[in-house]
Length: 330
Ligand code: SAM
Ligand code: SF4
Image 1 (cartoon, helix red, strand yellow):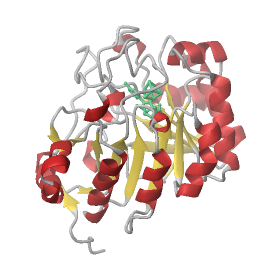
Image 2 (image 1 turned 60 degrees about the vertical axis):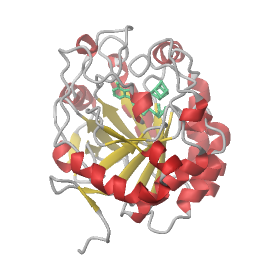
Image 3 (image 1 turned 30 degrees about the vertical axis):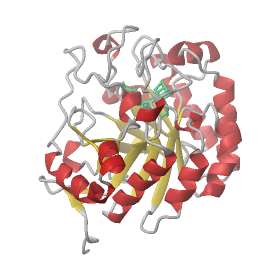
């Protein structure tokens, strides 16, 4: 099939058609694997405005990006999110507009988001036990998140997906409960191996690491898992369980390097174009947007030549990347 022109292709021949756009580095939770208890957030004038975020989105769409995921921080605490969603959804060329959220505001936002043109939602959920949920998120209210999931179902979102990070000494015993919940609710679920992004003191990442293979073994004791050939073009490998429509995904940055098929770049809330999750290299799109906006598209094309071949996460080194996942746009 001929590529749309112009298109973003990196030096390793990978076509970039997926943008993860972070709309804020702030969050109403402080998940132990994602943030420190006390965080310093960006001054507001350093964060891209809603119009600037829309400009960035449009530039990528014109360069051939077909899928955008809005993320953060917690995207739903950002004011005027519906405006951004509507503006991106109406841009010709975009095929899929998605959001990743912690679900805390979803109860009231799900229906308006759907009306504004959002198509897919991923919701993070690491525990179904209220106290433990509070411990893992430091501020989260499980009940509120479950109401948010229900609201998203009622708003008609197809293939809602849960994201869970499993830590050895925190929630490993809940893996099957989380799968049961997903199956009963007709949701997909992906388990993500913890990545060494940002300096945290709550736990040692190496000591808490659980591989996707271990999780599959645990789930396999309860359900027969068979590989599902579905591919999102992304890092998840999917499995299924006979009799249920849910997909069980595993994102394994440590145990199954997925960089060879990488199709994505990220833009942080302050407008840094990040070419790889596991790499500090970036281009300051905010400076371009605010000073020489006509140079936005050529600068993005040029920056893509710096996309590294793969990430280099190492659990033994405490921190590879000083940037938190929330600052990166998870
Ligand atoms: N606040 C939203 C949420 O929690 O869904 C969106 C942003 S959050 C950074 C996106 C995803 O990154 C979440 O599913 C979260 O579990 C995951 N995440 C955060 N820090 C991580 C880490 N160090 N390793 C692996 N996944 C991480
Ligand atoms: Fe907030 Fe999401 Fe990070 Fe949790 S994972 S602290 S909800 S940004």
